[in-house]
Length: 618
Image 1 (tube, rainbow, N blue to C red):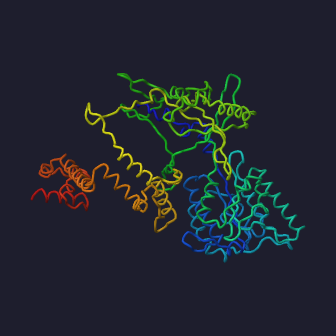
Image 2 (tube, rainbow, N blue to C red):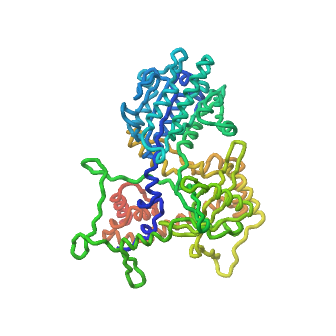
Image 3 (cartoon, one colour):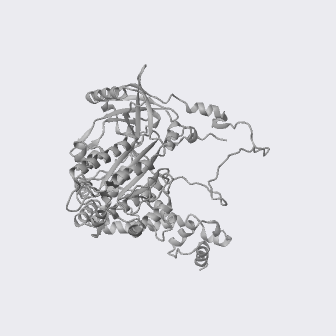
């Protein structure tokens, strides 16, 4: 068996035996959605994209429904619960009034979202008033406090799992910025104190509380009245947090998406600065390809996942191999054999630490040295106390002197040299834009760098040069087609979106596919603007002259005709028809003949063959 280099040099995040892979699998997120169901959530409205008025309750439910679908696709191991407060009915383990847990049965913990949950939650608005009901759950006379009760219930739902191995979060949707504002001062102070203490108790247990406020069209949600203390906002954080007036549904979805997708540590690295001095760093992946989830094979009888076992059979005797399997790697005229133990040793090329080698001026670092997405590094004092202080000193000196660090990094991943480039903090009026830290750039080896060769159409003939007029027209065209505020983050992968839409339709028994929009297609409306059309025409005229339209059209037709003739000319269709070998060709190859002879392309393979036979016999 030949040695598979991809298996030997598998990346750290793909190796099931690596510590990082195991940490990623073990790391989960537990989420409780708290939705205010008071009458005010149903009467307050905001205009939607199509001009219709949507209630704040509808906006919150729509956001959560979209988030549940994202959880199933992107983070299927996470566990969630949906809880309403300020309700007429009650359903919770603590038997507290005004709190209704939607998806968690009595005496059970939160669980992973399912297709049944999504289908039931999509219908919640139709049955909410009859089955659950809405009422004000904060009453001064009876000292009822549904917000306090909701936080208590959410904390109990999140008792599952350890805060060290899982993130626990509460998302709170409400449009009431001062829940105790109408009460007497003494009652208000008492209820405020107890509610804030309940929130603090939850935070002390490692539970973070995220507020998603809904503003009225004519009144901004004032987080400073009560919630700033509940979620712990101060100074600049308070200004940055203030939501816009009349929060739209799409804005709310984006806001929830950004908060749900929390930053995760990709790897933990020991940075050895010199002998006897090392610090701990956390690495964050700035980019990672989004791919469809892995396929799980199920038993056709039990519908349970299949456990795959591999056995090796001797090609000579047919017996199952009992001894450890050896793999070979061809080299010249020999097969070099490796045992499983030797392959394991090959993976351990180094200790896996990041070791400092020295420093170089930033001018020595070129754009083409960036081999793949960099890793963002930030210090951590969790294991090595003082890492942050040492990192800050090194970080500041590198910025002041204009230097980057060269280091060696390797473990189960291929060993390579990396550049550590210090990144200074960038702030704006809205808050922090870029955090301080270091970017670990993976540098190429000498073998990776390729020399560019200039290929000329004719040997000894200089390449044609554009005239000043052509350069001017091309510059004008580029200015017309310039994309304002362009960012790759604005575009979703259309292939993945369609894949998810198909999965959603099958899982939820939907009759129609969710509409997906390919944002990578050209803007036809923008391309047809008079200024753009004029710039394109002037550029074409500068290249081809006044008859550019005729030349380009006739040239395209001529190239198409020649290409079709060339494709069809690869086979002697007359001979193939006589010998009955047309069936050996593929459908694509059969269609090249039909296309070249302007014959219909519809029908199955047999119909295409009969059409060619009829044409050849004429």
